[in-house]
Image (tube, rainbow, N blue to C red):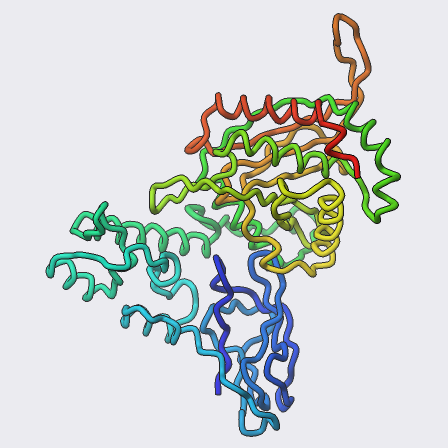
Length: 430
């Protein structure tokens, strides 16, 4: 039998093979890892759905593999153990009709050859669509599942709704092809022989760097981003950190400014829910999230990773300190999983430990805002008519102007500054 790449979960339909863990002739057990796949900035093992003997490996390191693509071939009869029920192949999971698109996807698993409607717009949004026979006929001819077409308020799908859906599929397909060519809407740069002017050396672009490049390009081109700059007087906050740090160390945690920032951001997001939202461009809706999961950008040798700390508003500073240390270590060791980087509602990028002042971070789409932190430095500041040396931290709030206006961004920033400068000591004590 052919073992195919199973469904990878929300938001992932392909990855790059970065490790092959078995060899031809090897006997494997059900659940044994076959390959390592880099997807969405994470490396995850892909297990075998059955036991058997490897007869042929169909991929090599560096290959791009899509859901439904063949990993290897197995002889189940030679497995030596009962394989149990095989995991269903991805193409058999489609319970909804769209036979032409599904057949094409099975035959051609590469992303650029997939039906855009099956890969990019597969959510059922209209369980009981009402449509006239003429619309249903055209939908059948185009292999469009009307359950995926958003109707009017009563669920009716007419020509206008069908045209809008087809237009969305065309935009998604065009964006995907452009991304394969060098980024959405960006033509590949002309190849230049740089050795003509001196010595050079080359390194291949890693799969992770490709993911980062594509995500950042998509975000920059898709979002009308505006940045708000300010400074926070963290003199008192740093004194509080130093005062409480020994107590946290006794509990096995390191208290940092980042921990305070997480809590302050969570409290501020509660006052300004638009910053904790996402824009559903296809549905033309703003989705407000009632949970607060904060992404924390981590600088690693392989590239930037953004693990997510969940329910920040419900945790005390001790637990947040432990979460920060644990997730940062997992990210740097490349042991971070896909689930650890999903579901974020707002991101924090802290360059304070490295240096630098204000910078303009790129929003982590589909979020609508991001906070950038620079290095705190002593500055002369006027307080009550007197010049004092205060520890000042530069901050930047970048936001999506489609969802957030300048006045709202200014109010959010003012409240965030206040939350940090007037942090309640009682909230920090163990």
